[in-house]
Length: 102
Image (tube, rainbow, N blue to C red; front, side, top):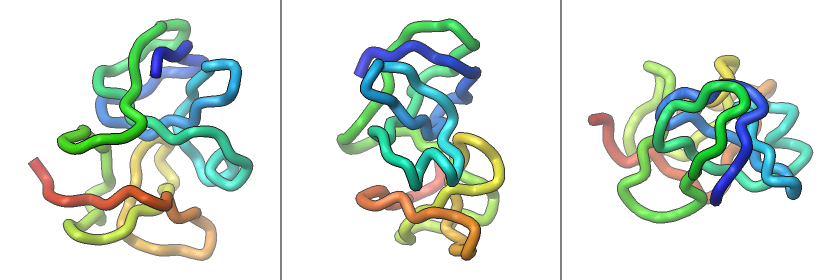
C-alpha cells in the first residue's frame, strides 16, 4: 500500500495505516483502535511517501531481541518493533508470525 509517513519508520517497522493512507509506527494504542497493519520495507523519514507490505511471504519485520521464531507477535514498548513476549500492556498482532531471524 502506498502511504504517507506521519512519523519516521525503521526498515521492517510495523506501522498502522489509517483510512486516509497515513502511516505511523505501531504502538499498543493504535493496535487496539484499528487500522491496517503494514511493514515498511525501507526506512521512511517524516513526510515521505512510500510502500508498505500488508501481506505476503518474505516480508522484513523489525523485532526486539526478545522475539523468537514460530511465535505470535505483540506490540512492544518500541514503536514499530514487535516482540514474542506477551505482556498485559501489549496487543497481539493477529495473523503475523515470526519465522526466522536473518
